[in-house]
Amino acid sequence: MIDAPKAIDGPLAWLAGKEHLGHVAWSFSRPGTDLWWFGSTDGAGVTWREYGSKAEMVKKFTDLKVYSKMRCGTVRSPSIDKALEYVAQSIENANHFNTLTNNCLTNSVAILSAYGVPLSKKGQLTDPNDYFNNEVPSAGLTTERNLASVGPPPPPPSPSFKIKPNAESVTVAWARVSSEGGVREYQVGDGETARSFSWKTTSYIWDDLQRGQYKCFHMRAISREGIAGSWSAYQCTTTAASGNKPSLYVKTGYERGSLYEPSHFPEKIGLDNHEWYSDLQWENIGPNSAKATGTLHENKCEPSCAEGEYVTYPIEVLATDPMQCAVEVYDRQSDDTRIVQAYVFNEISARTLSGNPRPDLVGDEVFKTPCSSSPAQPPTNSETPSAPAASEVPQEYLGTWDSTIDNATGHHTRRLVIQQGEVGDAVLLLTADGPTKSGGKYHCVFTAELASAPTADGPLHIGPSTVTVAEPSSACTPGAVSTVTLLPDGRLRRVSADGEQLTYTKAD
Image: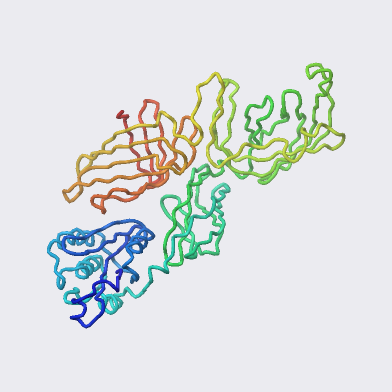
């Protein structure tokens, strides 16, 4: 319950022998979430209700200026549906407003009682300040807070966090954030569940994954007063497909993109069109590094590279810095490239064992894998149409898509709209309509963000959905992360992480 202690003064307060009677509002949440409903009856025919995060709830009452305190507590078995029924009834009650028996207090008490707060008195013939200070604590809402001390929500861990794949786990690391309201805990989520950690923690190993599993994570911070900050953008990766030994990826010179498994590391690596390493003998291929000895062939290019003489040097090659990457692999048979997820050595260095070759042919980073934790976009050339940027949704996915579900309760419609956007933008809009089990109807609208940059042909990796319209609220719940794929027949299939899937047909 939220209190405006200096509201209602004048003759009515004087008759009660007080300077102010006060004014109260109500608020309750869905357990285990940061979704809150809140509102107030402000007078005859004047009532309002809203829903949002706890931060939005606190901001609303703070911005109204008159509210300064709130009392909170935990309800063992709350009933969202019953509370919302009384919220709807409070709108009708406002049309029959009565200062003594049907007012801000009686409606707040009715709503919170329906939710499950054991308030023994209905609030009639009682001034709001007395009820807030005496009756509310006895019902278990014992935690009193000044709205001004709650502070703003903390920012998400900045600017992002690293995801280091290991065969069946992912290590999520982050830097601590500072906030005016302090930080009580951090939360790491995958779109289905969120795990909480103390403010001292800066990393966590998310295990129980499968090899080759695609996984997305995001984070947020919670203030000391329990105000949740916004979620960070998703970071996505794929766990190692097989074993712990990284592959070797080469894209230099005539090597237009080659991926070598540990058991088939190459004997020859091209550096450019004129120099190469040969006779490579690989040894000590392990989870963190691989080493080889061989020969460097350097073209002196005198009088020209086509007629130049070659000089050879004994060398040692070292591959290090294993990580998960989206790499471009060239297929010599089709003369085409494709993007694949691979666990590779990110850096390859070389040193000469004798002699002085050209400096660019040896060193700490002779070549480096163009590594990213998200799928990358293959380059284009003048002979192929321009592909969308890595952060854009492919053109074929855009537009409106329709589907239906028929089950025991009746006929349900789904309309999916996919719009252009970058990672972190709300690119998916889903509208769901249909009959409820009780014989009524539901209307739900959801939005979801693009979780990672897609390749030219997709698929789209979508973050968890949020509810923007819920009629009734009990019928609409946020969804899990999902993958959207364009099928060969032109239809669209959306598969959620919880196993649900639905196929859509283009409507426009």
